[in-house]
Length: 325
Image (cartoon, rainbow, N blue to C red):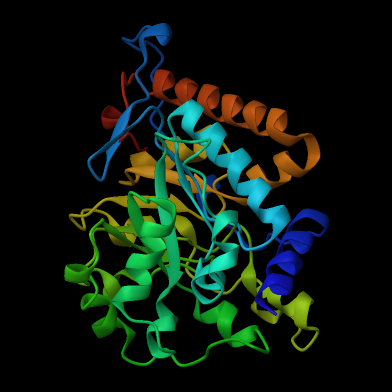
């Protein structure tokens, strides 16, 4: 059943319009410099995230895993991420925890030995029998550098087969920190993280996963046929999430509707340490394979460098606070 659901999700994302709402980037303006004291060719896009160096502050976000098709997607995208010095996250590994034969569809170290690799399991599984053992197993399965614990109440409540008991999860997430041997990232899934609920949790970083990009309300509504798309734009827009997490004292990934290098630059100016996206990369892969992904990443980096240049910044750190008043 989970394998079929994963293929359903891929098919909907590739073949139908699944974006809804506004992440808020169009309302953010960066400070323009008419005389930038910068040489474009000397711009440095490197950053440091959770004690790892990235050549560019971007994560290819969790997409899939658990089927033959998704295994190829993971290997192809992880290889590109490795070659470009990006991070890479696999989709939820629950299916491989429950059926170890499917673990190979998540394993990418053979093609991406140096990539910053993020394992992934849902927080709600803590209410359905999973313990720290299973979360560490997800990390060990793929030799991950970090673990994303995703919170997706909208997606689960709209799935006919969804796990709908989210009680006491904050306390249970807190209890994982001392049991897992890599940093933990709390990850939103298209409807955002509410800072006032989670900022004090015992995790190492946040991936806001804001509203305004891929809509899991729309996807699950279309998949099940049981709900109208009234929840298509439900959630906290990405830019609003970033404002709420500003100065939280922990690393932040901006995701949800990030579609260009300019969006990445605006995210960093708003206080994020890196940005991430999934849908445009999946679309590029579906249309033109690895070559399409390479082209998309190259355009992303080039557009980002233009934004750095036009704000008279030399590196990613100097972008912070380069916002119009």
